[in-house]
Image 1 (tube, rainbow, N blue to C red):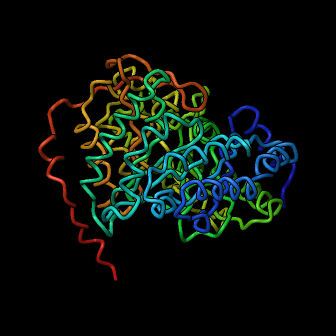
Image 2 (image 1 turned 135 degrees about the vertical axis):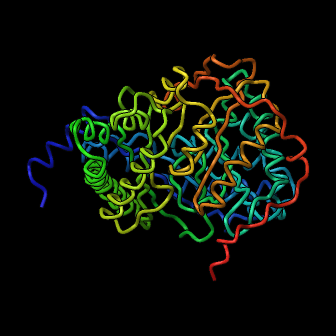
Image 3 (image 1 turned 120 degrees about the horizontal axis):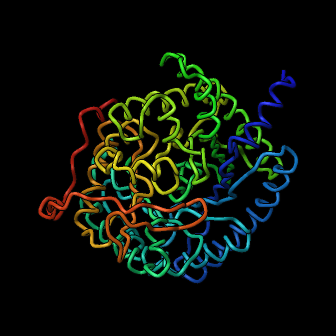
Length: 451
């Protein structure tokens, strides 16, 4: 039973603590759009997306008015385009343009799925798509790209790792006049999931329904406010409070997702209960950790505090919804989190510490800005390290790294909006070139043998 106190508490969360639904994402299968003639495939892709999602944004806006809950983004994810373009045996850039055109026609913020899954090797269409990513992202506004280069069961495709370092650097260079934004729309995964509603890594997996609605909630400001009221609490009391708060946040996401699916007449998929920060003051995962007692995010103890937060969020969210999925936990994107930005600027948070934190957080190195003269080999090695953490720990890890062309350590790269602004972080300059150039595949770890 919902009582007046619950209603008033939710209103306060929305007005004062930045509570929102970060995204409602419609997943759309494009498998029935495969055609050996590229132009025909593009037409089919555009037609299916615009028909399936014609009311997607309108429904989101109606739900905002009905419940008074901000829904920040309305998005679309599609079948990995490498699987669609393979039949054409041509560059898939035209498909990227069709996706962008469809995104604009439906009014969504972003469309994800310019993607390839190459954790065990390259199949038809994969190499063509990966090599086309810089051009595709430089010619489109709303298209996002992802590549899965490893998994616990397959190991890590080091040929793909090497290639992605080069692709990210090229994407930054091609969009240097637009704050290197091309690289900000590329995610490199290990253990990618099929139902992630968050960009830039969302794609619609082949095991998903033809269309589906997935919801991504937010609420770091709400969790921070809850912890702030407990200055003398023990660690286990803080964990319990975070669980209770995550439950309330997730229930809101469950309500909105179920209603959106009903109004659009498509299945409801999952609630991703990740704490997704924004540049808004107070809406920060770093500030939650500091409320627990750390002088600055990045101090010793940060990884332990983040582990507590991530676990408590998952436990609270699972009680609130029978369909929790996606990434679900705590995101630590540097440029999108005001507390993370300040911690980097203060010298408390380094790339190495961030890497350690990714072993216990929701994803990985997210929206990290590095000097523009960083080599492709170093970017590849950062990807390899992060993929190894995911592979060995049987969790999703990812890298979204932006080489800031023309900028040096300590300078800022300002993206604007939810992407925020990123301080250029120092990187270890010692070369991993020989290791990266060996190619091949890092074998799957022993814990992959579970059957």
